[in-house]
Length: 265
Image (spheres, one colour):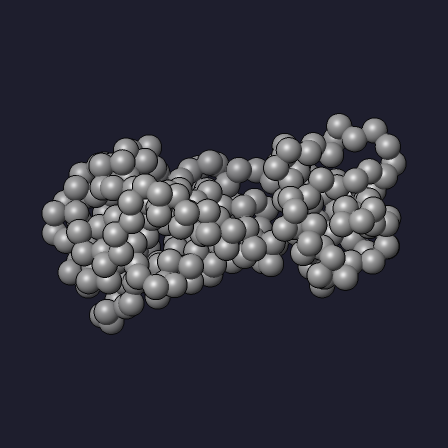
């Protein structure tokens, strides 16, 4: 059984001098630890503020605060390629669904994009409040699925601001229902990466439109913001935005892993 994961915003475990010490969890995480009924002797996985990864054993509880000792320190994994999802703002709880499930898959960052056909319109105050809600969902999903880090979730952005974020990406895959059916995602990714595995730290961006899809103008702007941008098709079916927002990054993550395995042979 995998260990329950917790993430520390400020505490660096390598700086702790005692054999056992309090784990300075956020208030909601401390409550979650209690709800899990963690008992002395059980182990949890902890990613600290330095992004170091530990297995910690529960020693006792001081009120809501768990006292732990370090049972094992894991080697920090190399910074492999990451996937960022630019998701067109969608109505209802669709954004929450996408962020929850895409986090479980391993998406590293989310950029909510205010599109011309987005039904939802958020001012700065509402956008900031929504982003806080989405960050809490991403953190919960990361804890549940054992991700090495909590994904970054940005506040909703316009087209210009989003394009500035895409300029340095190793590949930008714009999912568009009007793309030619031959515009396969794996082929476009292969072309952008030069036919081999992605470099360490490379960032691949996947763009998915809202209900109604991206407009032709938006597609042109997104395609022009990076020389390694390409239009891709997800097949002959017209997918809901929340379905595409999960399927597309899943396909990219699979392709990146497949290329990494092939390059290691």
